[in-house]
Amino acid sequence: MEIPVLVKSTGGIAAGANAITLYNLGSYGRPLPGGGIALSPYEVLHLTERGKIKAMNSDKKVLTEIELYSMFGEADPEFSDRYLVYKDLRLRGHVINQGEGSTFFFRLYEKGAKLPKAKAKYYVRPLREGDAIQIKDLEYLLEKAEKSHKKLVIGLVDALGDVSYLIVNEFVVEDNPENHGFDTFKDWDWNTRINEMKRLAGKKKGKN
Image (cartoon, rainbow, N blue to C red; front, side):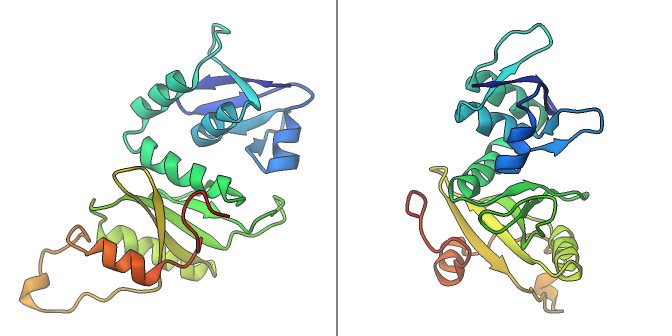
C-alpha cells in the first residue's frame, strides 16, 4: 500500500497510521513530535520510484517522478547529482540521510543500520566528475569528519550518471608561487585517482 505524502519543494510529510513504517523498516525520514514523518526530497523521489509512497501536492494532485524531479531540481541546481549518489548507496543496501552543516554532505551508515541508535561511519560529498570543489569546503568537511570519528568520501558522478567513490584522508597544498590562488580540485586527474583509491563500494553499480 502506498503511503500518502504531502510534498513541496523542500521535501514531504508522510502521515497516517502506516507512515512510521518508513522509518522503522527503512530508516527513511525523521519522526515528527505531532506524528508523521518528515522526508527529504531525495527520500521522496526514491520512495516514489520504489512505489512505497504516493506523492501529492497541496491540491491533492498525485505527482509523477518526472514532476518531482523537476520540482526538486528547480529548488536545488545540484539535486540531480546528489540524488544519483543517494540512490546508488540506497540500492547498495546502505542507510543514508542528509547531514547538517553549511557545506552539503550525506551521512552514511552501515548496511542494515537502525536509526536513531546507529552512528554514521562516513560523510559523503557528491561531486560531478571534473567540477570544482573549494579547498575551504574540503577542509571543513575533513575537520568535521575527523572530530566525529568518520571518514570523508567523495561520490563522483560521471557523464553517464554512474557513481564512483573516493576516500579522502588528507590533502596538502605546498607553499609555492604556482599554488597561490589555487582553490579548487578542478584540474585533478579524476580517472587515475578513482582507479587507485576506490574503497567504499568495491563493486560497480549493479553488482552487489
